Image (cartoon, rainbow, N blue to C red):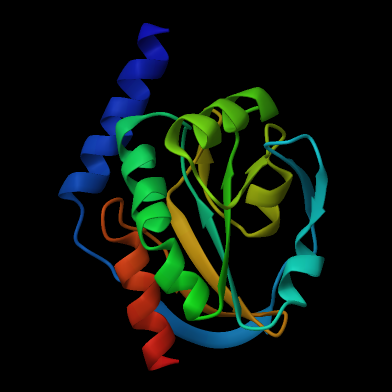
Length: 170
């Protein structure tokens, strides 16, 4: 338990001191077609999420219920109405188990889908780095089945603002 705490703390501190990155528009490429189980135990095919109108935000975070990951999720929760009005469907992904995702979603009252990816299938499909079972903090905006924006070092407290800014620029 101490090792996990130290690792997550180190990762959180690294993200605090790394240079701010609001993401960037990318040359559109096909979004990965992968599936995982959500916080309610239901299988979610991301390909189905991409078919919805507007954008799909797939964001990755290291560990449910840790300070940085909670700040990131709460940023999206608090701006959920604005994101929804802008046509954004939010999907969070970590390498946690379903039970951890459920507890996190319930405790923080998260109105969006959280995917449990303990085997790292979604992480690998998106080519997101991982270390000792923790995904790196990244975010992808998908429109029409194609990735159009990528934030390789997503913010914790400003995640929603970064996404809304990106949508205006796309």
